[in-house]
Image 1 (cartoon, rainbow, N blue to C red):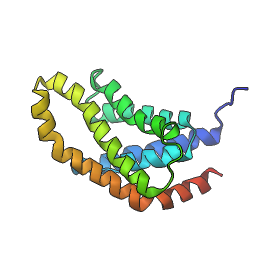
Image 2 (image 1 turned 45 degrees about the vertical axis):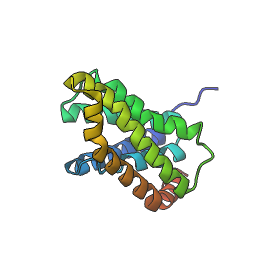
Image 3 (image 1 turned 180 degrees about the vertical axis):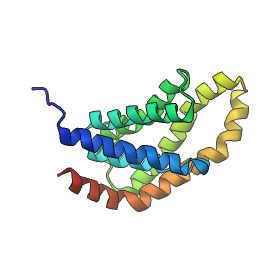
Image 4 (image 1 turned 30 degrees about the horizontal axis):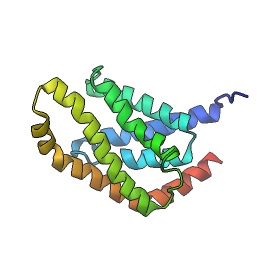
Length: 167
């Protein structure tokens, strides 16, 4: 039997997408300091996979429209980079639920996303891949560190709150 999406599901998806989108825009003044990886972990561990993927799809479209980079070279890589988080957390890492191991996975996903985004960046700017990667290392480290710390400190309280809201 196919399950229909309820109005409550649509409202939750809308609210969580808004939180994801707004925090990223507010923190965009800081280079690679964001709560995106952390929030996607919380969403992936709390919601159905389909709901997490819808949130990411809407977020990526909105982010690209607002930032003026609605480019069909970036778009699929951004989708793949962010969608890897719920896909892998719901399959390969579904039994990992403690904040410390999840924080280390946050580091992995921060680097994975950064490396996925190297591909379109190098293609569009026509810069040497190695040179771009070396220049990007400090930014990758900042994303990994912010992901690690936010998951370590905020994951458990956030997951409890979100699960109570979803009841």
